[in-house]
Amino acid sequence: MDLEVIIDNKKIKADASETILQVARRNNIEIPTLCYLKNINEPASCRVCVVEVEGMKNLCTACSTKVRNGMVVKTNTNKVIKARKNAIELLLSNHNQNCLSCPKNLKCEFQKLCNQFQCTNKFEGEKSEFKIDDSNNAIVRDESKCILCGKCVSVCAKNQGCYAIGKVNRGFETKVSTAFEKPMQKSSCVGCGQCVLVCPTGALTQKNNLKDVFNILDEPNVIKIAQVAPAVRVSIAEAFGNDIGTFAEKKIVSALKQIGFDYVFDVNNGADFTVIEEANELIQKLKTGKGLPLFTSCCPAWFNFCEKNYPEFVENLSTSKSPNEMLGSLVKYYFEKQGKRAKIVSIMPCTAKKREILAHGVIDQSITTRELAEMIKLKSIDFNLLEEAKFDSPFGEYSGGGLIFGVTGGVTEAALRYAVYKLTGEKQDIFEDVRYSDGVKEVTVELEGRQVKLAIVHGLANAKCVMESIKNGTKKYDFVEVMACPGGCVNGGGQIYVDYNKIDVSEVIKKRSESIYIADGMCKFKGSGENESVKKIYEELLENDNELIHKLLHYVHTDKNFY
Image (cartoon, rainbow, N blue to C red; front, side, top):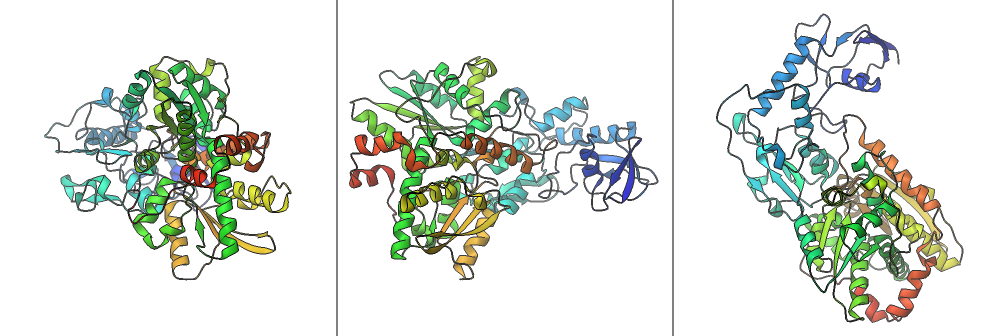
């Protein structure tokens, strides 16, 4: 760092490539923003980050102005505060102010700034006419709450390569919409929910299914089941003031029991089945050399993306159901054999799972980590004071291989643990090479004397690049893991909201991933094939009947798309 700048009378070392905003945040000097998202959306359009720079006539946007040696910056003068307030009040003048009934109430960045700057309805006039689009199974879009920051547009295009939404029209008529203003359900949206994570207002939210869940809980003569995904346990505690990545598995079980569920099962257990079925599928394809590369199919947003953009590769998707669907099939079969009727609610880090359950019809309702937090608060449960409880048998025991499904590379590592164990009888607990990729990671491993080429991909824009390289023949793989969300499920579209003004998304992914890897290291079983409860279910419930196993744990490729 070869420059020195002064921000609010504080001398700071800086690099010439940095902006005023980056230098300020690095030194814990707060400058508010609404449109800025590091490396993804930096249009300098909201004007909320303006600062005063000595020697410059006009105020500068901190997010786009590079520092220079000797620069003197003031971030909180009366002139700056007045300009910021003016910019916010202009946005407020065309904003739906039904804050108390908004899903983002008290979690809204715009609301927070309105309070901070004591904004009023200074600008009067007729508001634009907007509509609510709730056609999508996963995401609700409310145009009346959009402030045109562009974060959703940039994330959808740059990170996900979906281009489902964009800015249309001009001037006062400008809004964010789909191509030809089609309903979201008929757009190129795959329901990943990354747009929901970055939206600073209530313009984009997940479809709320809590009413349906409470209806299930009130049903008589029905066994109520909750099943919890791996990544939920490293995010839910954040909603109750805990550090990012806090591991709260046993408190989740306790909370769900208090809410009224009869049994709480672990989707990690279902993930162990997915590992075994998918690894066996890969081993068989490697032997025949047909149907390669094998693509993972457990991420519904990726599955949907493949159907929409690469239909010629749909048959390469693994026929193994997702852990959520596998566990659901096993649970319902288990209770049906006892003559009992069960209804299942899955708690997922994912908005796209709301689409998955409609596609397959096994799970009765799917809610996000955020919705679970809302349920806990609705029931007046003090999450931090809950006693710990264990998942119920027979679907509560899991291996580290099932747990690491929550992070990118986890499916591949779990499959390798099982494949090596099955083919050689040896245990290899950690495959460092498949962890912590920037977006695409290529790895070659040896299985039975053969060099097996793997690709680990997260973020659908990266998946698009990989698919194009496979399509044009420049790359050849045997196995490709794809997670739609950057970082995998730990950064799923249904996870607890994080203030990206205070922490970078990469740091969020790192903290949650590390929490999962620490828990993996403490697991009794590392590989899915070692899980005694899984072995018992194969033997006693499924009776090692291949036809029944395929019926419950696999789906059949058809000409009709699932999504």
